[in-house]
Length: 355
Ligand code: QUE
Image (cartoon, rainbow, N blue to C red):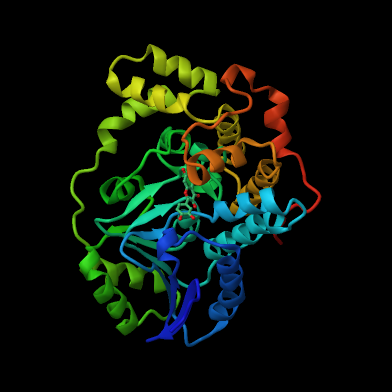
């Protein structure tokens, strides 16, 4: 019996973590983030733990993102609260811990993996996706930007794929995520428990631990079928490799075929400010270290926590009132000034730096 939102267990030499808010699609709360940062440093040093396995409770999700509803409620009900300052800081510290983790970090992703969930999986050494896997970085939908290290992994994908995923919130299933390099293998949902048991039974010692994990996963891996991205990449690169949101919109308008017009219609619903800061984020984070990226994203997140920012309007319209009609400010791409974008990249009083 437990009402904990996150469960920790050590079994067969594995550190097992279960995200356990199934009714909220295991969306990450500040409490879950603090628990992770409390446990992980010890696990990293503990000789009895050879690897970490991360999973989500319930049938639907690995992790749908950060608990943005909690942030919205604090903004509305407790303007002087500290959650908005601390949530992103502590989340990004965990993202960085996973990126630098000294042992295999294996996410068994058997459902929705979006936003904050991607921050817990993509920076680890191994991500395994089932047929229920569904990936997206959907933050521009709610007036935010693809954080949790989006600036790091999205800028390392092929061509303009990262920009496309960041701006459109395009969803990927296992075959496409495997093709893109966002996950490492496809394993059937029904085989996930057996894979975990095999990892527990395996020798994962020594400097070659990651390769040993590869070999265990390979015993369970299946062909996820044909990816759709290879045929899409020509269009993605031609339309999304532009320097500005206005130029991407212009290219989509001029591009023949149904696909481009569909992307255009999708972009027209999103926060113009979100799209502009996201493109700037990707430009600034390309070829930067993980730590530099998190410093940049923390500055951006603090800008987005102002009560009049599109972020709170987006959460209100999509997740609280569910009217699906956010009133973006400014309402058009032409209305976004250079100063509005630059303001998201200025140092903040409690800047996040790593040593
Ligand atoms: C964009 C997002 C998120 C989102 C929807 C978006 C996000 C997030 C959730 C979410 C989903 C279900 C829940 C919950 C939160 O939705 O980050 O608490 O029960 O966490 O369009 O970025």
